[in-house]
Image (tube, rainbow, N blue to C red; front, side, top):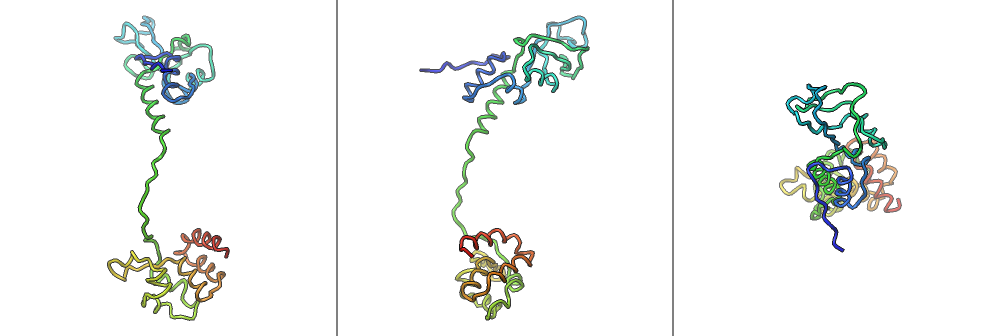
Length: 238
């Protein structure tokens, strides 16, 4: 069955606005939901000579907006009529109406076509799935420099760690912990992954996990690595 496309008038009644938005969003709409989504209702005010400053040159009347929170919340709560205590005059200047305000029938409420279309477009954008940006796998640039490696791990194992870093051998350099992309231009920029280093010290040189944990806690430059370090230990059952 073909669905009839609802055409919006320039100023839509509450029923027309709700029906049109329901068709656009496939969800039900009410006056309360229109107001919740910050749509401004209007009512047409016929010229009243008792309030010349309100109408100015608009001697035929004009569409007055209802935007004061108290007025709109009264509508959203299900009031039986419209009470306008503050609006804008024909020149769009905010005006407080004489007490107790102007009353109108609910069926006199209108919603601007452009406001409804803008809201529908916004809701459709928000409903669209966020595209997942797929990036080619690349080696992490994150790491710690030579001085930091030595400050955190030197003396834990029976080896000359500084020389091992210089020789670029085994778990401490080219074949493991050193981030290869960090030395594309010069070895002076070399950085090492502290987690790979620590796990290598434990696995190859039997450095106790407790000592390695202490290093991550003691050195401020390793604090950002702690979550990943703890996750690695959990995955390894250590």
